[in-house]
Image 1 (cartoon, helix red, strand yellow):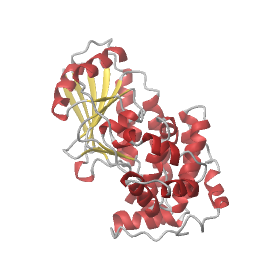
Image 2 (cartoon, rainbow, N blue to C red; image 1 turned 90 degrees about the vertical axis):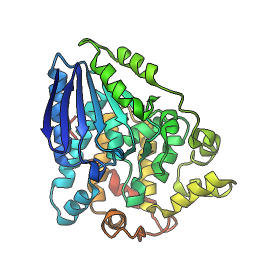
Image 3 (cartoon, helix red, strand yellow; image 1 turned 120 degrees about the vertical axis):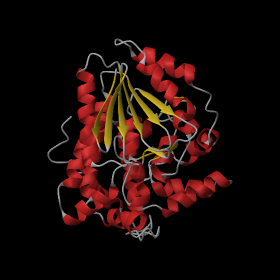
Image 4 (tube, rainbow, N blue to C red; image 1 turned 180 degrees about the vertical axis):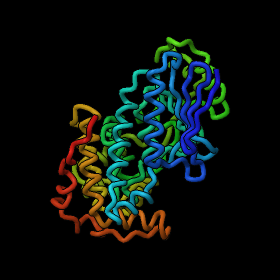
Length: 354
């Protein structure tokens, strides 16, 4: 059986026993709009209820990426104009992230190409996460005056050692090997084998289990090797174990070599407010009982960020004027009053319904 239902930016397809969701905004690197979040949620509900669907696969159209994140220009415009779109988007996106984490059928995310921000929320919460040699993975939010969201404050602190803290603060890209090392993906499969993977999953019986899917993935997978995060894990452990960004920066300055220098350079271009907020949220995420707790905390921070000058300045510099030269307020960590972060810790009203 092979049928398609098109919602323009999200294509829904049945291939054998597989329900396939394709993100279809390739020119925008499949970045998420509210309509797309709703279309994905609707597809997940329908596939969950369909006894003929054994597995659900989510993937991106186009050669360049799975999903580059949320449509930050739309969030910027909503915040500036005071419309409810940004809050509605975050509430529905976070609910979708939680739905993926608790989905009753095997959920397979093909993280081929750029997988960032909201794209991480659609993939890394899933039961089966596939990366390829083309995967470019990041949570780059501190570079736009924002913070790692979509449940990343649950995922990243549970990564090996302090590598998740490194990822959340620096926002730098990593490849397949390090995504797997950090526990944010499961297997590396060559991009040219993805059609074979789809066909094999589509051929599974109606009652296929996650174990059956694991066997298929293992048979097609290859050794990801060791990436820079794994190779520098002891350095990351030494420098990112502190309770403040200032202490992390100081520790990095005492280290030698290119990796420490590149890490330091990245931190020095990020919003001091975002770095401090992100570290607090990541540390709280490590102490949290579950994903839902983290998503609710993130939503409170999202609503406060709409009043933060760095959010608008960061998006201006990155996607509107594209001068890549944000002027943060305050401009340095030393000038930031840690108490200024407390405003982001206020719970959202009403709380996120999960």
